[in-house]
Image 1: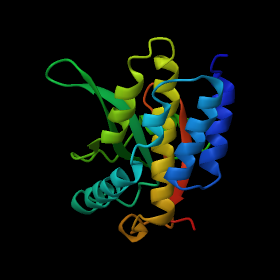
Image 2: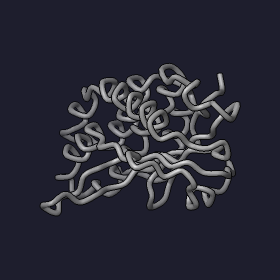
Image 3: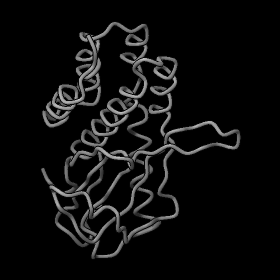
Image 4: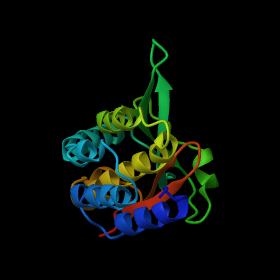
Length: 198
């Protein structure tokens, strides 16, 4: 059997939108793919401690908007997933936050015109880089898994964080809610929990 883009996406959306914790959601994502293809690294991916980094992301986001405040016109955040090159030309994952003055639930074009570009907007994700390290030797399925797993991890981590841990008051000085979308700079994305929505 082989992985299928649409089936994997449908499962991913269902899991993230169900509101489960990052731990349970990640296990469901891995279980879904594990049933399709056996891989030596599934066990390693299942046992990653993703909750530790969640606290670090919370601290980064709250410090970011406190130290570099955004203005009252910002109504949405894009939390992008991308790769940079280090000094030795090795790729590594980061996530980053920018804010925008517009939002459209069905068209991501709004995210291409950020008005809030904080200097400390980048966060090097140890978890994304661990995931990448585990799957990179798999030449058959790396490109597929490098698409779905980073998006799944980031969506689950942020959804759970916004719902259960983030101090919303630091973000809602001007608006009742701020829309949040996360995704790859190169393509697919998901609208996740808005900040300010119970």
